[in-house]
Image (cartoon, rainbow, N blue to C red; front, top):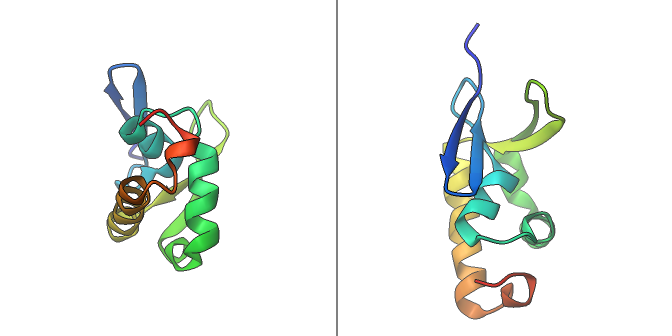
Length: 96
């Protein structure tokens, strides 16, 4: 059975499922270089609940479960994340 894999980006890491789904909090934290990734994700999904249709919970080995998104879902999340960063809605959550 294929195993999940981890991409290391300087001080951050991004986990992926064996089928290539991305761990949402990991990716937000790495892209935004923010410790407020969980709060940012909560804001994004509260304001855009449709993105959850591309997400599911995945249990990574040796770690607790995490929300993961497929490619289409991550594209939507990434777009929303950049829109929020550009309009300043999330600037109070991070040091971006």
